[in-house]
Length: 140
Image 1 (tube, rainbow, N blue to C red):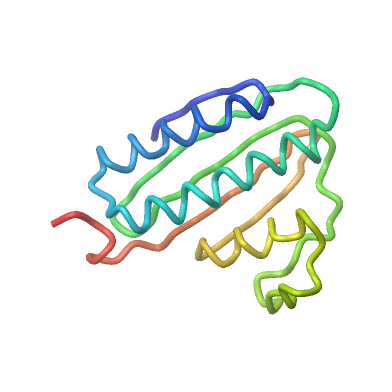
Image 2 (cartoon, rainbow, N blue to C red; image 1 turned 120 degrees about the horizontal axis):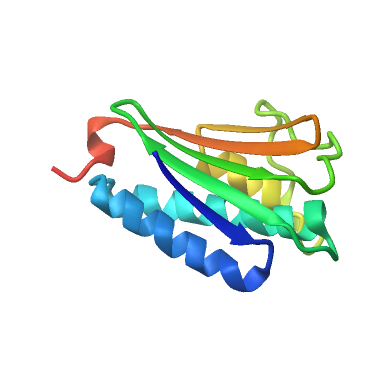
């Protein structure tokens, strides 16, 4: 497992995305999977900065883990707890013509990952993004 921490500022999101890409390349993950998960990571971190921390500063701890079966991104923050209005895994994506600006986030993350989970426990928010890996997801 590899761990990083960033201050909750939009200027740091690209730094974390670069670290994730490097981690995936070192673990022989194919470019298509890297691109999809990097987008999900960026959207998740942006959501934390925008909604959990709003106008305050805080830390976001990220960990990346690759096993033989999955790639897991875990994000931890101590901002405002999630509202509980997140889409369920079984919810269909909304009509793109009806989405307000900024309304893509959770649906996009769910589309790009195999499992998306947000939880809160004693002031700590945890966002977990999981991609199940097949042989095709690794560089041969």
